[in-house]
Length: 421
Image 1 (tube, one colour):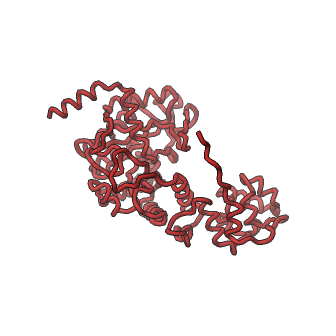
Image 2: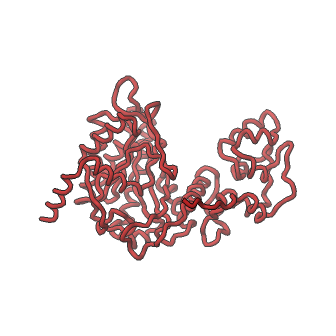
Image 3: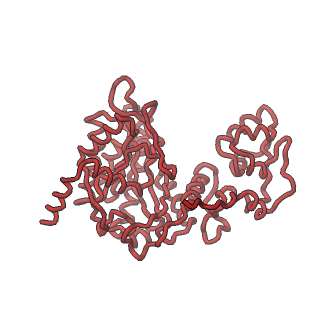
């Protein structure tokens, strides 16, 4: 009891700015904070506060390219769970802080009015109980929406073991909700996060999918029906904390997309933490591995690739870090190229390195009126350096055929010397 009283006394001495410093830093390890796909809310006409459309949004970017235009914080970094990979685990010797509901609401409104952010990404450590913590997160979103008519973006990180009623209420006020699966396999989750139950995660994600589908059907029948997490649900996996291969990670992602209708699976490269367990690796995986996983994920979702195709013949089930996954696949199947862009079907055009979905759409539209030349294709893409080795146009055909390995050596980025400072 005396320890708790001393802790509360120390917390009372922290200023809001000090809490913000601690709890924004504690939230940086969660990558799943994109705001795409949200419903259109705005304050046009002087009604409400905030907007997810139009002007007035100030976007900033972190050095690694992630958008940080959201106020991204934890309600608290106190946590009763002791997940081995988490900096905020109960046994971690980190500086602790806790916001009140009112403080988070005030910060969100003040930051938006100063044009710093477009919305709020809110997560939390587990305090008292999952239901209590989830209830506090819901109170923040409810206050912003109902008391302050806030129409900006809200993303809430859900606690899977909380009651279904609280999860449903969170999704009524949030644009997007997410539940982290944390690791690529349930075996690893049990090993590194014994308090988190895979069944709870599956049940919560499945329940959300059903409610999101039902709400979407209701909205089709009546525009007055309430929105229910209109931007869907997402999740995050930590890459490199366990021994899972890229094949295992991508197969898990494919299952999550299919079973739960996720909008995004986010990949977060493991970052070593102070006083970490001996079970964890001593160094982080290459950041390029995270990037290649995102590229492979994109291929399965928008380019018609299957995971097995991308990973066929991949040594040790790991993506090639020197070239992107589509180019790696094309080099392994050199006999299927070059492809005539004036005749090939859309599905085959999407498999050509250097062509994106928009470029393919434009090629299909243009070739209805005339035969495309290399110059025409060049106006539709960023660069012809790679693309020209895999296509035939009215005036172009690649020269002497190169096998996959020699072509890879020619197309792969040249090694760069690191700066000394």
